[in-house]
Image (cartoon, rainbow, N blue to C red; front, side, top):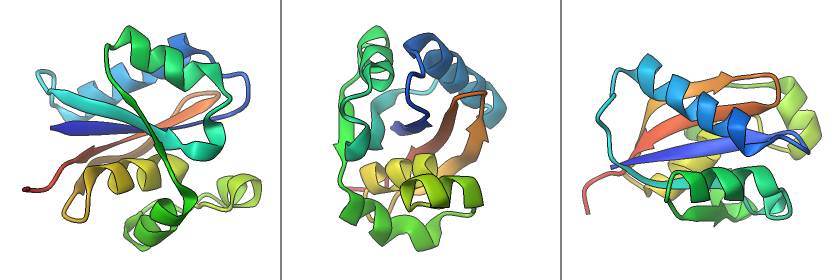
Length: 127
């Protein structure tokens, strides 16, 4: 099962997020994957884009606490100084995806980006 981690700028719409997730699936070569959820940081709760994207994909939106994202940040391969300055996280999408995927989760696709959003895919570990 795959979790899509999302990061986005204020005002990013669901169309851009869904298109980026579709691009991520193609790049990862997992066209028939089953998504478990979309994951975004809790501090994006007021942004409608991630919630609307999850609704369109008929998936739950998991809002990940900053503490959980900080715990997995050492496992994130991407370091964006821009993201770090803006959010305190070097890769919002990767941290959200890995935190949602659990302690044995692994990235299937590191962060990719569009104009206003980022996406990373993680696979849930065995339960």
